[in-house]
Amino acid sequence: LTTTQLSAVIADLRGIIPPTSQRTERMDVLGGMLRLPFHDAFGSGTSPDGCLDPNEKDHNGLEVVRAIVDPVCTQHAAHLSRTDCWALAGNVAIEAAGGDAVKFRFGRTTCADEQLVVDTDLLPLANPDGNPWTHVLDVFNLRGAFSVREIVALMGAHSIGRPSSDPNLNSGFSALPWVAGNLNGATLTSAFYGDITGRPWEKSDDIPGEWLHSPQPGGASDSLMLNTDMSMVIDTSSCNFGTNGPKTFGGNGGDPGGGGPGGGGPAAGGAVSNSGNCAFNAEPYAEVQRYAEPANQALWKSEFSAAIQKMEELGYSTWSVGGIITDTRLCEVTDTSEACDTSNSASTTEPSSNSASTAVSSSSSTSTTVPSSAPTYFDGFLDRTGLTKCLFTVVVVVVFVVVFTFVSFACF
Ligand code: HEM
Image (cartoon, rainbow, N blue to C red):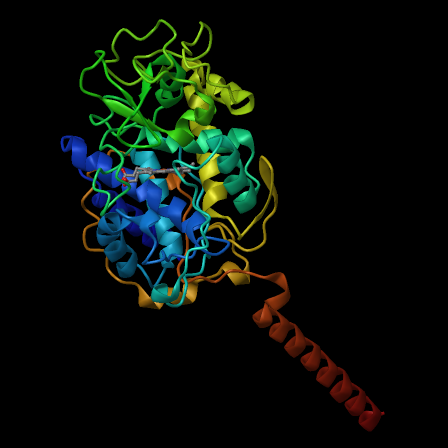
């Protein structure tokens, strides 16, 4: 694959993101583009496979974003598997939302028949029984040995996008962003963390597992959290709220009524209002406080992008908690080894139609490492081409020695 081919895919993926002037649409598309590789990684099998169980309700809503992402992937299918393309779509969305570039490597395979894909129920539930954090840990540890820090970092993905309230088409949670005011920019922001404890959240009476914030008590809500989001700070099942009166958690005296991302102020410092005596989940809470520090926004962005790379490479790399220890199956564009050489696919180059559309003023494409085309992942033991070449060389040398010996005897 050439850099040009990669740039064409990236440009086309950027081209499907609505411009900043179309605020709501932009947020929805960016959110969907990032949710897609998450569901691909956790939905079925042991690694991303470019397929989603068509009967799984958890994937509701993703068909909308697939309708715009998949045509781009199909257009570049000669150079990039669909699984690679979905990962790249997530990376492009992150950059467009102001996040750090996610290192991209290629070589993921795509399932043969999506209609036969069955979910293995490894997606986390938004409203599990008991302490939701226990459930979150189970899922993320089972799937990829994510550390508490990595899980908390990943959850900041909820600073972009929003649920959709139609329970038949989506999750049925309220169609509100997690960070109030974020409709305007669809911006990845660590304000998400400060908001959890910095603003008062009221447990919804109508929708189980949902917490709402409104700038004015009793007024219209401007943002939401799920039980699993709140579980990074409290065990939502432990709260002891009275039957009458508000069932709220959070707000450290710093919430004068919201008004924009981060309006609630950081969680660190100050007493958190906890009228329901909710038990704290101390370990993730410490990570939330760390990311909530406004000075740690850059730190979170870099740890978020590293965790996203890990998520997108589940099953393809061997990870230790917090870092890669070995990695043998995905290729980098800079890798010139034979197994990663996809130059023969260049003959099947397809033109990219809308690459001129660059609605997103994102960082340069060079920051995303160039992927290649067809899934040619490398397993050292099955590098048959290399083995064949080696055997051929041995045979040539042996023949040469035999002929040379024969000629020598004949002459002398
Ligand atoms: C405990 C873990 C998680 C749970 C329970 C959860 C649950 C949900 C739910 C219920 C929605 C609303 C879907 C809809 O109605 O359309 C949603 C949206 C979203 N999720 Fe998560 N999620 C989790 C973790 C993650 C992670 C790890 C990522 C990415 C790294 C992610 C990215 C997103 C994004 C970007 C959206 C917005 C989608 C849009 O705007 O269309 N989520 N999530």
